[in-house]
Length: 259
Image (tube, rainbow, N blue to C red; front, side, top):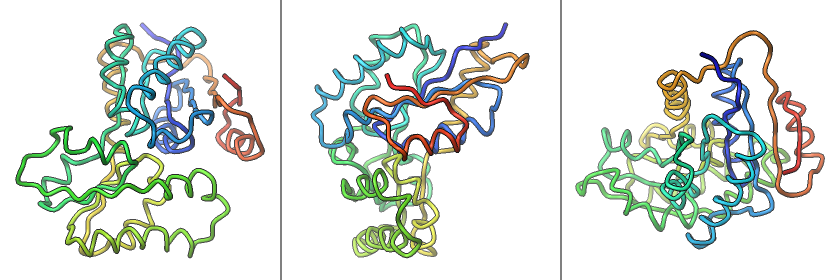
């Protein structure tokens, strides 16, 4: 049995695109739909109840419009705030969440730095992802989220390098021996973080693990798409379109739509 319904990725902006792109490149026959909830960007400063309400409303609209076979919360903040509520409300659909990669970091580290949004850092110690012997140093970086969302494509190599170095220096001063990128937006600077952190701080992210989890659910639930025709892919916006998003959709080969 095959299933040509799309896999839906949700984020407040461009942050979840690396997850969508990684999955898409490894599974080109699967139709994907990426939602950038630009109308409600950023998620980080929002109260939990507000964010849960936003995501439930969006998910209802997306299910009605696309009938997705899997929904991926390609956002650490959205996952921490709303994943359990969404799974309860829409039990008929498998959800994949993105949480900071604390577990793999804890295998080699006892002083873990976590860089994320205000919401993620505020909740990180309540996730019970590592045992009490691990010290967690959390730093909220809303300015970095804004930089990646609005300035990344225009920034030069030196500016990107300096943005990563600034935060690496903060964690190094705290004695961290690992860094977990706890916001999907930060994957856009993954190479810069790794270069600046080397050799004394190891950088962790959840990119490969999320793709494997989606593939597992596709196989487990017999949801793989057929190979009869090439699938179509959609880039959705809740806010107004502009040249940035038009260019992004064109480069990806996705159809641009407003929700």
